[in-house]
Image (cartoon, rainbow, N blue to C red; front, side, top):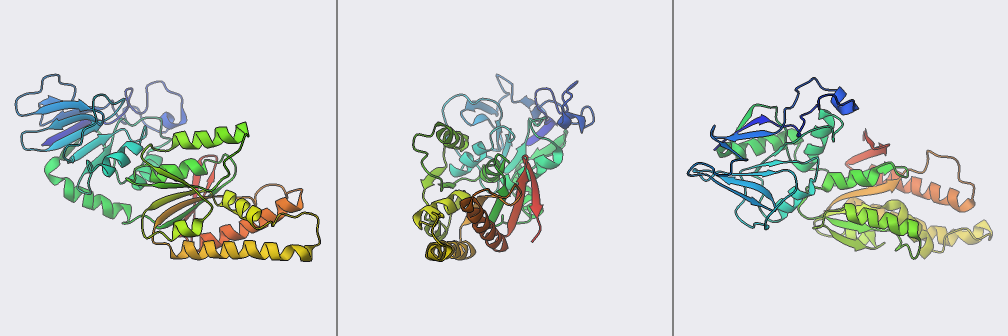
Amino acid sequence: MEVRLEGTGGPDGWPAPGCPCASCGRLAPGHRRPLSVVVDGRVRLTDARPPGGYRIRHTADGCELTGPDGGRLLCSVGPSAGARDEDAPFDVVLMDLPDRPERLGDLRRRGRVTPATRIIAVRLDHRVTSEDELARRLGFWGATVVPDGTVVDTAGTASAEAALSVRRGGAPPRRTLLLGGSRSGKSEEAELRLAAEPEVTYVATGPSGGDDPAWLARVRAHRERRPAHWHTVETTDLVAVLSAASGTFLVDGIGTWLAAVFDECAAWPDGTAADDHRPALGRVARRCDALVAAWRGTRARVVAVSDEVGLGVIPATPAGRLFRDALGRLNQALARESEDVALVIAGRVVPLPP
């Protein structure tokens, strides 16, 4: 089955005519035309009555087309309709990945997308800042992008996916540490990187929030942003989490974990002499050492978020300075044992070299 992508852009294309945004301003007019798909030169996904031998149906996953040769295509754009299907996997998936990449993770979880499936991002527009940023995201999600006019043959999807794997550089890093200040976008970046994974365990290390409306609202926003099929674990026992034999974990975050450790070790300054405070700080140091050892030895894939606290003013309190120094040392130790480290500033990601 031959799939021709006449256009791969959003409803208005990319750039959108007359749009003054920075994303559209980076591209020449007509760079990507509105999405248009033709199969075997005779079938459009918008056809209400496809010709004989072709079957089109609309499910919760999107518009599904099966050709006379058995080739299977899914176009997943816009709101879904109909019942969820648990049928055979697809050869080609066209997906609005800038919208909801977690759909891809759910398809993988249910076996509808396999390593042999060719995944192509479509309906592309100024929701993404640039083609380079789009390519960066697609690398995390195991997908590709093609220019308008590309023809994809479902019979060759397995070899195409193998080539894509080489371009992505093989397996993803086992340990990723994302640093950033408050509201820098570091948590969103961590979630973005794992959005298309079939199984993810979200490890929340922060406090429950009690009756604090602001904290409860923040926790709720994080929870609502996560894909529905992710699992959530609330714990400060990160050593046990990292000792898991396998799996994919998002830890958010190291700063709240360390604050909890200070609580558990009674290590916050209370006005006593410095010598009397050393045993508690020793307990904190041992917990940090144990975390670094577990991070070094983990067999799981882990993306962890931590606060970069060394860029602001010097904390006014002894407790603030003590916490800043301890977290700075812990961040350095974890970074030394990480394959991938990046700093997130104002939503922009700056990779840090080893």
